[in-house]
Length: 386
Image (tube, rainbow, N blue to C red; front, side):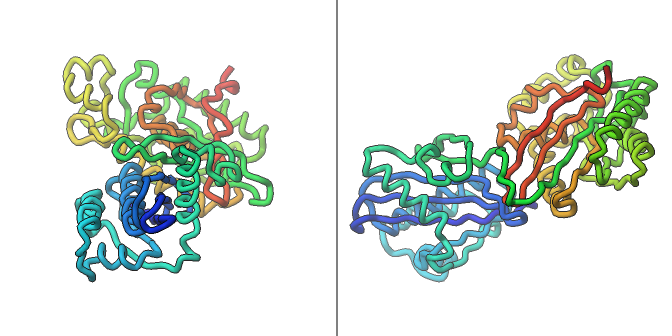
């Protein structure tokens, strides 16, 4: 289960007066800033702005992972004590906002609260002030007006459908040299199996096929290519046969051992294992349509959703980054895990998985920097196979 930290703040220049809020969602395991939100809300009190900031931060966290645990840190003693249930909520303006915050995560045990001094809430405070400054100019806050935007490089901005607030999500960018060498994952999809050219679903719940003759040749070719590059320092592979065989070919050529990590396994496609896309659409049309429409939908028969795969891959990614900081590691894995790592690095939506082509025995690469940012270096390179 992932854990997020939400830091939120709000302010009013006049109390009541022109007001705004700021919120930030942080990955508790890595310290990575995952999302920012800010909005100018017109004339309001400090307390209203603080509650609005809390709601926006919780919503941003829910969008990232509705199953995560969330630890809220704010410098508002009032909001923290009221939301923790230790103080009664008497003011009529506060009651609906507190109720709205409580509804974001229906399981009350998912969210905890902590008061922090104002000097430790500078990120959210800065966003709130940027929102109020934008309001003074007759504008709404956006990523392009954020001082963090100027400092950090490119970001992407989306509108919160409920509030109109702008949310900025950190995207990949090349970090400055003083952060030190990144952890670089070279992502190798396994070679062909008999199911690959037939384009059949082949996940972690099927027959676990071995490499075909073509797949074994591909593994040898990619091993030669990686040996010429000479940058791989460790090899980690999925536990499935096709990935272990591909990894073994590379390991033999490079003189390295292979570590198996279950987190790198392919998605479980349930009852669809071994079927083509057309066969699944014919036999399970409603389930297929739901799967194409939502990352939370599971394949027929209790398979793994793309949302569940993404949570697993985020945990695996963070663990491997911590274990291999500053090193170049070959991850021998599958289509969905590789596409998911690339998607997460780019901050792309789940539907982008259907818009990526990933060939057998192809190479991709993502670099992860010490400040939590990522840079996609390579995608679907098959030059070594030609």
